Length: 314
Image 1 (spheres, rainbow, N blue to C red):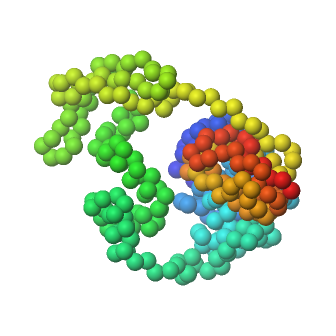
Image 2 (image 1 turned 180 degrees about the vertical axis):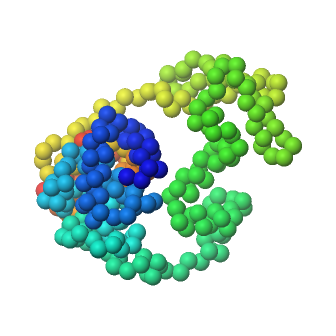
Image 3 (image 1 turned 60 degrees about the horizontal axis):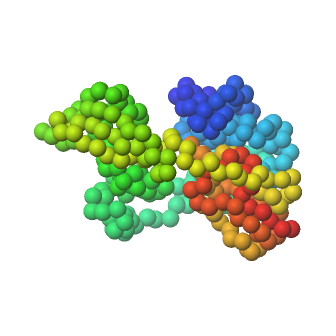
């Protein structure tokens, strides 16, 4: 495992609720690497192996389990795209028949991915981005969007909501200051903000908000903030059963896309919804053919491993 990945993967595992299984994840990392063909691990191939290892631990899978029943497993998107060939061709080629069983009917790339890329109209993309996000969009933003569209859209949404926080010192970006602590922020040349936290109000349990009191350049201010750590709502979700049409979540995460509706006909392998957890995406596909009886999740729902996502009559 690359040294730079070690601490990142450990943090990701703890955020996924797998922190107590870190030793097991390191063991599965070895197996996942072997399943990928003992590849050279740099960004982004190392992420593929890390996602694969956490997926195996989360679903209690051995190396042999993956080899024996890959067609019935919903692998993380990074793993699927690796086996499709989006990262290029690994030295020695892809292990077969594992590759074919993982990607199934998805497109496969057997050459350098860039050879088959379609031309991009950067001028048109820049115009479209400026219509969506404003006139500040630069050529650098266009390049970022073309390479990482989802990440770029999330970033622009964050900036639109909170402003440009790149000027905030890292420690105060990730954690709040202590009561009475003072910090200075240079927002542009010749303009500096001096901020001092005075007090934090009690939690409004109905709205999940708190009132925060601080001093801004000597003047007292108060703002209402959303306390994301406050548990306002406890959702008890139905768990998937052993019935093949009862489709459970393969991991804990947030639903970012729902692909089906009640009453819709689906075939085995069709995508039902997409989950995301700490930059690891996973498509939940239908294990059987039939009709969608119930859809129990919607976009932005937080769900746990084993929670029922979709029920299919077959």
